Length: 201
Image 1 (cartoon, rainbow, N blue to C red):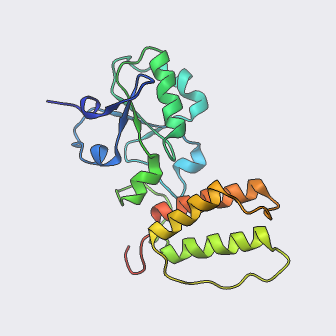
Image 2: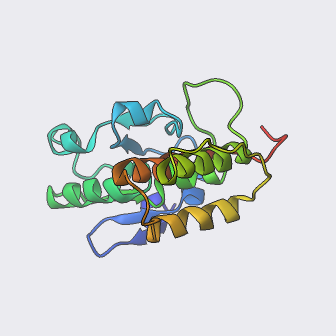
């Protein structure tokens, strides 16, 4: 019977990439070590974490891996797939033979509305909240001396993603706090991943 590792996409770095839908289709009885390499605040934050995931921040992966069997099926997870790819490459260097990376990370997992363990209660934010946060934050970054307007339109996820992509690629030249602007875009992407259209929870 083929395993998740067998159906995953080979990566030139020696590990395999797994799509969120592949992982979601995996039977609950499958033997798979889920390792989340984010920081504790992210693990218990807005994006939540996979059920059964073990928190091992990226900086500690090499040390923690000393206790794992080299032939274990290990799936690495992070926010967007970047840090987990680094951790996957580290495990391959250490001699692990069945290493996988969750492509797109918890952003992708939340975007397709798969179940997560999330300590925060209540319904997920509405898409309008993401737009409002983005627009108010942009206003603060570009023209902080003027009062922020009140927003509240009904955007689509695609329109918000396109806007965030555009702002990431070409930040406004008038942004005074570049780090704050990058943090704003990151937070809005996290909100967007878990947001649902009005009336859906």
